[in-house]
Image (cartoon, rainbow, N blue to C red; front, side):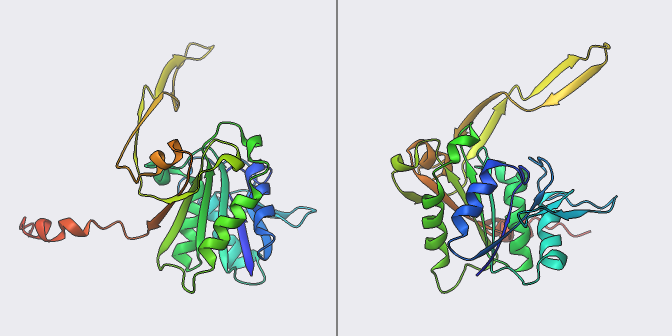
Length: 249
């Protein structure tokens, strides 16, 4: 099995090393990852300057672009064989609820899914990436469980979040829906040393809500959360209602 491994934290991140080690027992792993952190890059592409890729001494490809760039370059140019699966992560921080819309980690897996390659995105909810050491066996078990099926779900990727506890304390796996995340006071407004005003997006208090089967609730209860994400964002329940609005010109 040929496995493409990527992320949005950069090729030197702890998470991608741990994930690559976990996937190594399942097949031949090739890392194609950004040369720097690309968190919250979502599904962006580099269009206004050329991309450059170099190979490290340990065989990884390093790309001066986004996670989506990495997947496209890997499949179209860098790999000698088409990968059988793409694994992305392990992200240094959660990707639950609306986070999946901003996450470069999830976007990389989504791009692979668009191309027709099964994909899984992994994230760790804890604040300290070094705590990912020792998670290899859990990651292996999750991958084996997803890949042993005869047929990977069409147009679907799996978004996996690991709780911020010791691997041995994990209570199991729950298949979940996306919760809802809200930030408060997310923009800082201040002056730089020269007296020029600036704005900084990020931080603030986070609150969650959602049904009992939501991803954040599973994490809160000490479970690994596995959420199937579909590429089709159409709200089918509303199709007939919207058609009745008579929106003709």
